[in-house]
Length: 294
Image 1: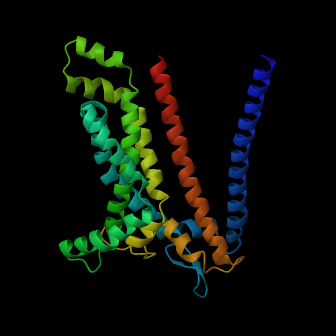
Image 2 (image 1 turned 120 degrees about the vertical axis):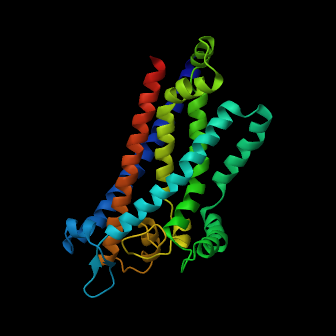
Image 3 (image 1 turned 45 degrees about the vertical axis):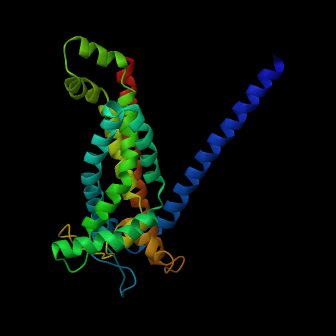
């Protein structure tokens, strides 16, 4: 008995140390981001950095306007969600409620496989197949546009959205469905008026997680978005995102230079975006748990 208690206490100590180390690494990342990013404001004001319309950090004098990059990221994220959310919602509902068991055994691994494909593979597919098709079909000068990036990133986000929505729907208590059917509702009425409202917090969390997946993507968007650091006036023109800018320019920026610190400033913006998304996901998940316990 004493030996079992000591083993349990030892396991608890190990788990505590693992959890503490995760927190330590997170704090370290935040400290490094702000320590390297805040010095950029010695060269440019916060308003100029966030609202400036020109990003030319190597010009003379350098210009650190991050607004084109922020708008490019938001445009690609919104466009990706327009593609991913309807597909993910309908596919999640189908897998959770309508798909026969044999079909689920086949489709579920396919969805998981799509989530495991490296982003560079999606990028090559976008460059070699999607971009030329969009260029020729819409008679554009280039197929590397915000629309192409949104389409590719939307496809990449679909598996995550499907999985979360399926889990949210299957976690709805069976008694809800049985009570609705017993009152005379059809299967579709039960799904629309009982199951989906009960799973709404999970569906919202899936959408926000999809947004986080899209806004944090680097390689694929770097390959298919066109890489133009200009304020987008159309969905069918090249753009550049925050992640792509950091990936492209970090290797060329001298350590300690204003350009170097400005890239960390972009990373702070990206970190704050993802922090807000994660807080929203946790809030929705908590609301869903509280709703199911009532």
